Length: 210
Image 1 (tube, rainbow, N blue to C red):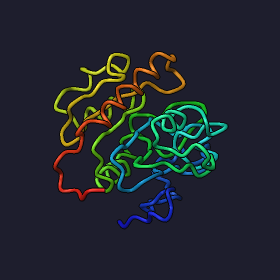
Image 2: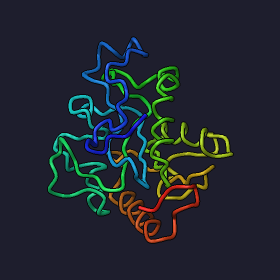
Image 3: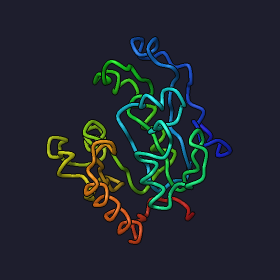
Image 4: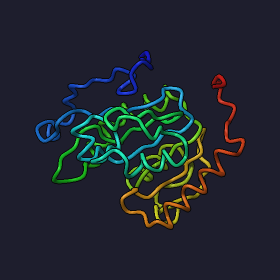
């Protein structure tokens, strides 16, 4: 699977007509695969596409493109403030979700998350980030199960928010869903991540320097 960095949207050319989860095919607008820098150090994983992502095809999209996670990325210098919300210019960041399709009436089932897992695993393998950022409880559970030696039941998103968890090959920096954060929680996460970015966070994993 080759990367096409000329496009931030679905740069690995994953199946945009996927029908692996039949009950998600009818309600979805489109399949929303990962978006961003294929050589990113920071990989964000949410639970499922937002309503706006389902319309625009961009993970974590919001109505005006200046709220939520993208606003936090702008404050970190990881997204350009004047970029088009339909094609945000993220820097050193890759964005994806556990499931690629949205049912507006319900969250994904465990079976649907399991069915989509090969897409996520392929993105993590190809991007080979340094830091994984699970966004929300469901993403933390999935990422912790796969990439730490501790049971997922050890982690609770409220307590893990704005902390660093040592994983197997990656560090995890969990985040509450942006729309659920208080201003204080947002500031705490940003300050923690700024400190991490200023540290020697890169591990020896055979990746080339940026």
